[in-house]
Structures are given as structure tokens and as C-alpha cells.
Length: 158
Image 1 (cartoon, helix red, strand yellow):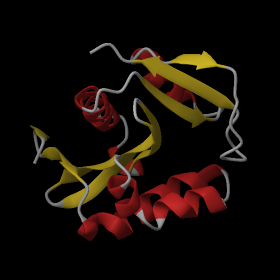
Image 2 (cartoon, rainbow, N blue to C red):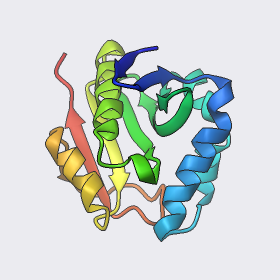
Image 3 (cartoon, rainbow, N blue to C red):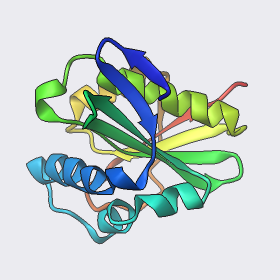
Image 4 (cartoon, rainbow, N blue to C red):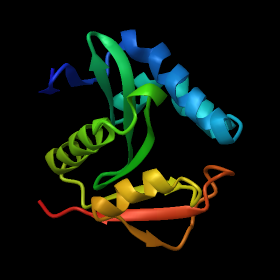
């Protein structure tokens, strides 16, 4: 266990969370869009993210997964923050902040210089989170997701 605030803890990837990773992300994506092939590639094999030098974090309450986020290694000093979601009835309770804090800690521990993300400008709550943590919008140079119309980066100072 990494972090514990009240009954919620953040834990690193374990294979027993594979289905939770898929189900939680599928649910939020399908609130507004459809599941894309690029989503399925990451969602159906979160262990590969870890095997390739990244990490997947899970927020748990009483052993039940209620949130998740992935740090996908893009290069030796760069990670993509992706697949962040919190179960609908747990949103607004600071869980995304807990997940983001673990991502930043992970990036620093792995000597990253930058974290980037691809999002959509209709996700205003997510955008507020990214702004709060200092992410800055840059030109979109990725077609990884059809729904992605915003790219943001955060420079890491170790």
C-alpha cells in the first residue's frame, strides 16, 4: 500500500486489478464517446504498461477499486498520463488528486523530465485538475485518440 487517506488507499498494479482497469475506463469513455482501438490496446493489457517501464495506480476503498490512472512510458525521460478515472459516485472526494500525486512521485522517481496527456476540451473537471497541477496546453501533435483535441505537458523538476 502506498498512501492511505481515511478509508481510501492508492496501490500499484497487480494482475487482480486487470478487469477493474478495463471496466472503470470503459464506463467513463462510453459516457461521451466510443471505445477506440488505442483504448483497447492499453485497457486489455495493463500489465504490458508496467512491463514497458510504466505503472498503473489504483484507488481502493475497503479493497474495492474506485479509481485508476496509468503512467505509460513514452521514452527514457517522458511518460504519458492516461486512463485516469474515478467511479462516478466517488468523484469530487479528492481521489483524482491522490492518483495525480502518485503519478508525479512516480515520474520523479523515474527521472522523468516531462509528463504529457491527451484530453478533450469538453472535460472541464479534468482540465481544472491538470491546470491545478501546472500542466500547460501545447500544440496537439498526436492522433492516438480520435476524441483527443488537447495536449498538455508538465515539466518535471527533480
